Image (cartoon, rainbow, N blue to C red; front, side, top):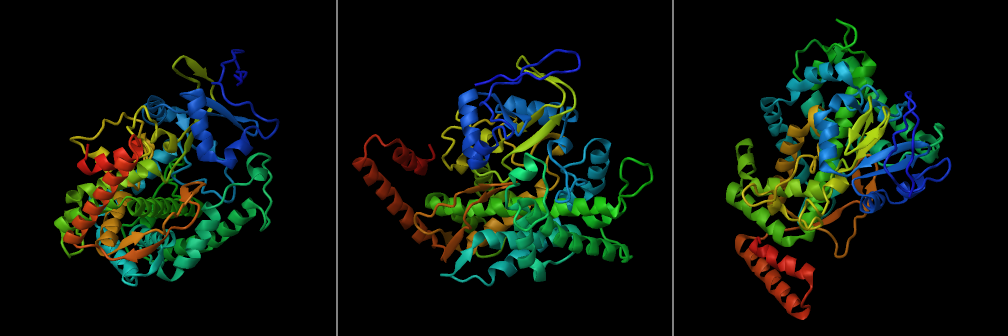
Length: 496
């Protein structure tokens, strides 16, 4: 264990929190890359609320306490920027909402906010339901469906229509492959540690750059077509074309800035929702008693008809299922900030320029906050009987003034798609299937989730199936007295 000191301009040397000893040049990069999720868990269990690791020679301070997350994201957001935490290059949207800061961010976010107001988002419901219906109309009982790919294509089409007024139907496969190449692989050691960016098909940077070129062509074509079209629209692209850059009064956004916003909205808008839904289908397949409760709610609220906007507030258990899925498998599993000025946390003084990292993966699973943190239990979100969640302990969409602007759309989209699929089908994974993890920019499953589509049981069939599971669990208990896991499974039927 080492405590690292860093010189500052006033000759005081604040000590960063302890952490594992770094290797020369590469720091802790190899250990982190080998198993990012396990490595973060090791850091938290070994060093407590704070730990310092090195990305090459650059120290990163990981914060593992809800109060720290709130301090950075909510209480002092202006002292913690996101722009300097990344390494902008030709493969990043350096002028998108995720990376710009200060007055530029505030002005440009306000400019596109109308596209995400409650009434505007509610207007997207018809497109969400139409495209979902079209997607699942080709599904049949007994089919094997790649839910990872299907959800990616569906959410891509929805985000294109709702935010930009375009239908990506004919481009879904190619676009999905392009985003996979851009998002779905780790940055290479050459560009992250040594800052060597080699444009070659065999390098991680070269693959990302090739994908970016393909996306650039599509996005700049879209911008040019919209500029030449005088039709008045109220989508995000039209709002961006009329937005000032927040630096020079009266100066509108450049094509590059608009391009980066579009890329950010498309990438973040479809990727996180698609991953969240894929993980939710996996969890429901693994927990048939929870799936039965969800389908019973759908039968009670909807019957045989498709959901409407008015039904959404009534689908409370559906909402709990999605919230619990994003707790266990948060699509955005890590985020970082760069300290503009020095700051202090629990007696530790950090210099300006400190890079702080916060992980939803860790915070959403802290045993001192979440009872049985590894158990998939939607009832924990019941406002009457659920547990109290301290601020900063759950932040799947970020927090503070930089909370994901698309959160209302993502939540509506997730509820409608989940309801429409589970009304008609019961996706089941192969016995013993292990999806694994691919924690890149988002928390993707390592192996695509391919499910067999089974029929939805009737109410009587569902009740009989639940009784069989209950009896099986009771026999299992009698055979393995003292098995804590089986006991919790049995008690969960009584919502204790």
